[in-house]
Length: 84
View 1 (cartoon, helix red, strand yellow):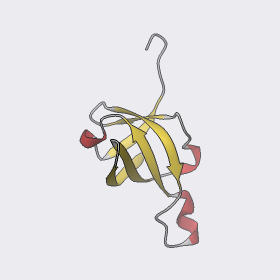
View 2 (cartoon, rainbow, N blue to C red; view 1 turned 120 degrees about the horizontal axis):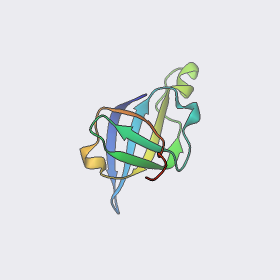
View 3 (cartoon, helix red, strand yellow; view 1 turned 90 degrees about the horizontal axis):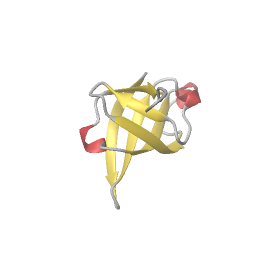
View 4 (cartoon, rainbow, N blue to C red; view 1 turned 135 degrees about the vertical axis):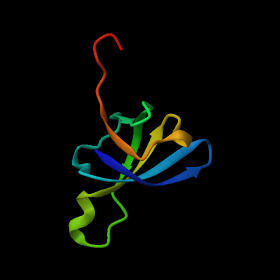
């Protein structure tokens, strides 16, 4: 589970979202689901936003595809069910 900390809108309808959680399994192409039922796909992952060296595995900035304007406050990995 990831907590949404901040959202940054960039040119060309690109959105960067800062998240907090166990980020070691984040990768390009992974889909994330918010509590509203929105699904987002990760286009890029960057490890930033840490103050202590131990925090590098806790925070990330991700570039997401999807309706980021309406993103919820929490995200979790979403795996397609057969037939989706």
